[in-house]
Image (tube, rainbow, N blue to C red; front, side):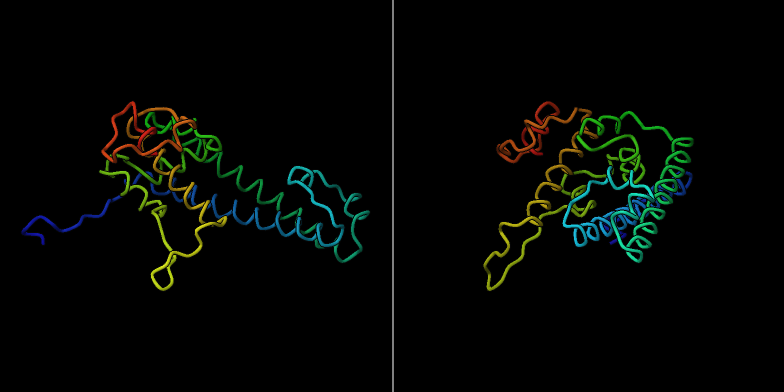
Length: 215
């Protein structure tokens, strides 16, 4: 394979940025843990009080609120959830400050912020994970790298789970992934109206039609 020049080569990430990339990976871990704590507290509120409470409302709870809402043991657990959430909030903020002091968003990744829900930190996370967008020769390679390729569940050669939340999320994530590839590669802003447009004839898109035909 080496002699024929068909040996696949791996991408070696620049050494000087690996530690910063790892910081954002740890940040994502803490974000997941914070979400778990919030969901657990929301679930306890729903079971106990039969009410739903937003994340913003939960973070505003005081000791007096908790004492009024729960009996002693549940109040004890609620306070522990809140203290953990506050600790994770501060940890995440500290990591973000550390990263922002070391790296800046490159031009080719700045337009990712035109996608709703992607701010500076998430754009930096994508930038530090991707490295060089040109290492992905095709959009399918990038989708596969992001684990957003199409997957099918079959039984007796018949497709299953055609309509459910998981399938919908997977399909949307794949579209957004493909859109972000062209945003980074071709330096074009996100256009929601083009995201669900027809694919056209399936050829590689031009810069102006990237999202229109392939997102």
